[in-house]
Length: 193
Image (cartoon, rainbow, N blue to C red; front, side, top):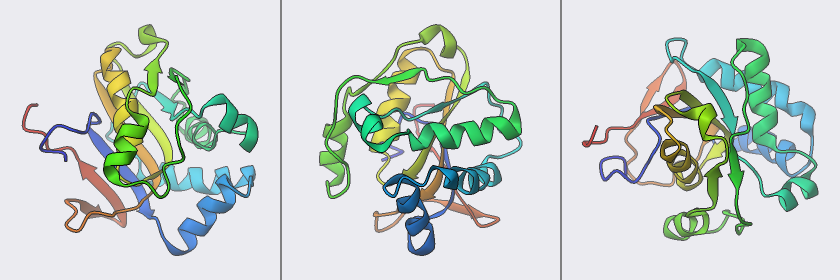
């Protein structure tokens, strides 16, 4: 997928694998509506953001307003704010979810890609033009949501888009990744760059 240019983000950093206790914590945070877990999970994000990664701003993956209203918060925004408080990197909500999408859980890779295609728009292009942006989310499964968000950011002029997630669910049989100091790192190895 990286070599074929289907991913629009330049690199992805995740604290760990999406399973066991990590999965339970994220579910409690997200579906159990235990917002204070953002502190613990945000600390994990801080551990996996490389110190040498130059960053201009953080932006959370947006929720559709109905889902945000139902949950009471956007988990990605809470995580981004934890990272911001510790690093001083500003959080900017530059992305907007233009339409409601089906829940991604249970969808195939192709269905996920179709589900989020053109679902996001950067409504503040002046804030991302020429900037190095970190896109924050809780979990990366297939990368479809992150790719759709990164495409919107790049179309608005972002110079670099890096994905930062607490966990990574790897459903591919032969993943290309590097494990460095217990952190999951996936560098985008596109031939067209």
